[in-house]
Image (cartoon, rainbow, N blue to C red):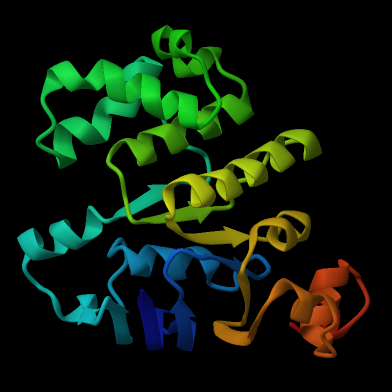
Length: 254
């Protein structure tokens, strides 16, 4: 569904992405792993045009979105993507219900009378009761905020959901609940998912494919089982969570 070819992104003299090549399979969950500063969040922002690429191509069903300069045409493609921000990015001045309906108002032609039904339906999809719609984001736990933010994404019925560190800041139990939710949505809705994460437990549970991003390049791509048994020293150190290995040596040199 998405084909990333020789993608480059620089901020001034600093090259963050260096000839990234990656295929995102339709209806599958692809996890992108990598340490802090490896370029994970930059990659996902390039996918939906929040960052302008320096070079390379991003094909969405064969169309190179890096060559589209019409805001109208680009907006039409962006509507096929849903983006779950790392911190949820709920609007504190709005109720939960208004947060969920936000995209309906600005991205679709859905009649306003349909909003209550959609809010109820999407909250149920993420395991929340209808009465949560009346609350303010300040009254929610961290896990509930993540789920409300996901309900907002689902309201506009995207074909692709991009998750930026969906389990960050959550305890192990809530992290597992979010992982189960990602799997459940794929099974129920057939959505294509791209998950930026450094949570190995979650990645092994939810991923059909994993890509390891290191210093702006894809160092390895494969199935969770291939990652569990890899001989690549960089990937192995990241998977094992060890402080001893080539990544640590690189940090020490820098």
